Figure 1 (cartoon, rainbow, N blue to C red):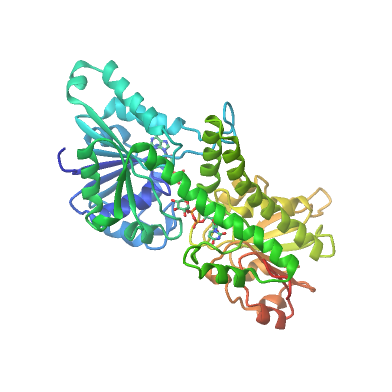
Figure 2: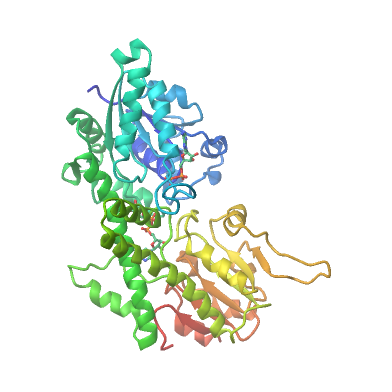
Length: 473
Ligand code: UDX
Ligand code: ADP
């Protein structure tokens, strides 16, 4: 297998963009073309004003500045860059199917299939195809079939010259820390059958990752490991979230419980923060995939076991709205609640599966008015997620509820009856409670679902405080 000089990445999203940026930064000898059919997205990646990048990740802007138009390019010319590539990464979206067989459970593979067909049509010579997107187990089989059938049915010269090797190289980056995760990975996993292809991909990572962190497996074990890693992580969050409710009922403190159990090396201290429920594009989708394949293989008990992780997650989101209503004299109709944080976690502008979407919709259903602030999520994204236009006024000028987008915390809280903190952005730690409360309508509540509030300071300023997993306030 020849040395890799040109990479093409199909899909310029949250995975493709940051991953290719780090490879470009660490491998100046490799030219990387990131292609996408979405012209707007490519224009945003190419915008000279780096503030407009489509993905927000700490450290990403600096890498783009260093590498863009040197050895890192963003383009809509899918055909050209597939033709020229020695290695092609598939980093397209694989959301859960919304209709047809497996709707609500299986992943929609139409974008993967389209990518494989494009590769089959345009690739030339020996090409290594790397699955990067989170995929259900055995997707590599589908990609293989499409690529090999393209060889059988294509022109004679392609049959002689073209060769494909398929590798699975799942992404373990977490949004918000993607650059650090890519630069200092816990491990890099490569699954495949062709030794030379595995070595070629390994050689790329060896530019900055130690050899003992790069593990190789067969294709299916690699694909399955990605699903199971996410299922285990999600299970931890659901476990601690379920205990947050028990702590509230028994007057214990979930942070102290998490700290005490986390000091046991066998349990470990990470990923034990109780919160409003996990979000993000992977956890729910991957567990649904796991449940789907378990059912497919007749493993009903295993499927039911993992499904509970999702049930607790939904329950956690729902119980928060009930609690807010209950604390605010059983009624929030006509009241204003400030929502701090709309992204599914801090340090990202991604809102996919964000608990804020469900919680905001449930609060709006109760008739309150929401004032929403997030440091990185844009207005149009919230309109599309909530599917409700901001502020509804009837013909008599009465406010029928709705929501508004605020540009700062100060703007958001004006005239509010309560604040609910839904993501753990740095700026929500140690708020200026005194100034904030002076702008609100009394009595004022602060509902903290991320344990970021300085309870004593907030109470001293006059707030009623509710903090997740603690009731003895
Ligand atoms: C996850 C995996 O971590 C990553 O390895 C994989 O490649 C993709 O899926 P991501 O979804 O980007 O990454 O973020 P992550 O940090 O895992 O958080 C997921 C959700 O769990 C967030 O909503 C977060 O707020 C929540 N969470 C996480 C908690 O509520 N408590 C915790 O202790 C940790
Ligand atoms: P992820 O979080 O997995 O990166 P995103 O939705 O952020 O998912 O990004 C996936 C990108 O893949 C999108 O920008 C989408 O336009 C692009 N895409 C999907 N199918 C194709 C295709 N066949 N060719 C090129 N780009 C594609």
